[in-house]
Length: 231
Image (cartoon, rainbow, N blue to C red; front, top):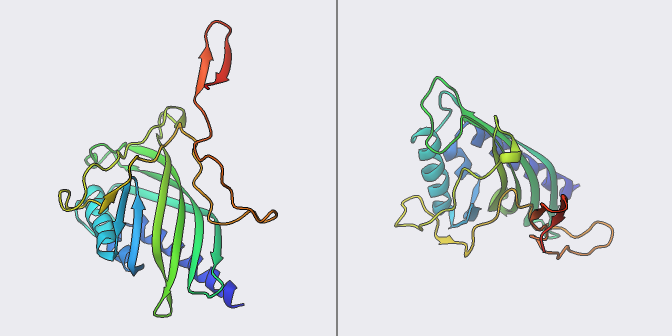
């Protein structure tokens, strides 16, 4: 029963994070993190709670709500968190969770545009987070969001590409930047990469170890009219 209680508390923690984030309550989001919490976002690594604060209260808040903590007129950012898989460690001190994110975002025609952000968009991604029990309370220890695709609502995902570009500078050159950058930015749609699973296969017990970029580009052989995967 204790493990079920932990799973329920972690699920509620992640869902409450989503409700705060949707209403741009970035201070409240940061308070959900452990003191040594870290975050991966785009191609950046934010180490420690104060670095996470730069991401949420610097990058996100300045970009989306012009420094305001809370809902902003005409700005939509609603994302569903689905298909959660949560595994608690035997000692009940740590846990891992995978959640699917499906997001609707955009700005109303009555307010100024956000530069580089479409009027209406779709986004989807995967959270592969880690949680820690700190002072008797479950908190986010490792925030790991992998954005898989973005698409303009009017055009659909057949023409989708990422609007949020890879980060280029670290802190302090970028006041809201990460502490480190990945060697290579993560690929997004039309790449169909796999975000590694934290859990083993429930029947075989094996961890999946395939190529996360196993799907190859598609080519059109104009002479034969045959579609084939590129080698």
